[in-house]
Amino acid sequence: MIAIFLGLMAALAWGGGDFAGGLASRRIGAYLAVFYAELVGFVGLMLAVPFIRESLPPFSHLLISAAVGAIGSFALMILYHAMTTGLMSIATPISALLAAALPIIIGLFTDGAPGMPQWLGFAFALAAVWLISQNANDERAHIHQLADLKWPFLAGLGFGLYFVLINRVTQEAVFWPMLASRIGGTVVLTAYILLRRPSLKISKTAWPFILTNAALDIGGNLLYILAGQSGRMDVAAVIASLYPGGTVILAWIFLKERLSRTQAFGIVSALAAIALMTL
Image 1: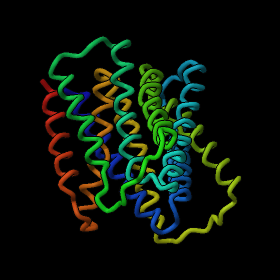
Image 2: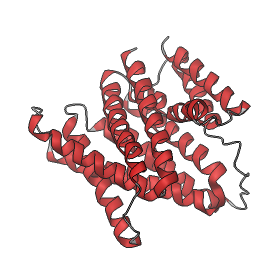
Image 3: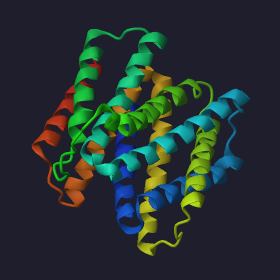
């Protein structure tokens, strides 16, 4: 029950972070918004180092954490690339679905098979992720060949690996793996920015959204790690994967964006999933 609650809080934090990141992206572009949020999060964690009394985990865990952060940032850039190549309407649903499904598959080998209520909850959750991620305002993408799905597939694989691997290396420590992960992600994004060499000047109006995005992203990471420590990894990951629901609801409330019937069904499916996984 605690794992489900913490996973849900992680989903809400990540959903809120994506909402703030989206507002920042409208002002300075997606790549710069992600870069600055990652950098701010890194600085925030570094400022907290003098106050941390947690023992250092094995160096191998730190290396894996850094690699996980790099994978997560790389997956995000792949997702944005897929969106810019005419696959916006399928990139997010496919990547989100795979990110949620991979921990379920891995969980069968690491934690054993869950009970029937959890299986039903997984099914409803996967349906919810797909439905909520649909955007009624997007033109439907045309898939001419399976190769068109490689970018959404790789993005989802990267997100799913993040869910699985960060859980593996945070069973004995929390802060240091989070910091190492943030370093890995910051290095990847910095390298990308240096290659593209865009103007780094940003509007002052973007900073509140960047800071909010960074804070909620770190909070979501922390809550997901604690959820994984409190229960099954697959349950924590699937619940946390419902974060698009938070983004959609916030956009509906504050931006007056239309909530499509498909997304509404997705939110109902998510609530059913949460209820089933508490049984």
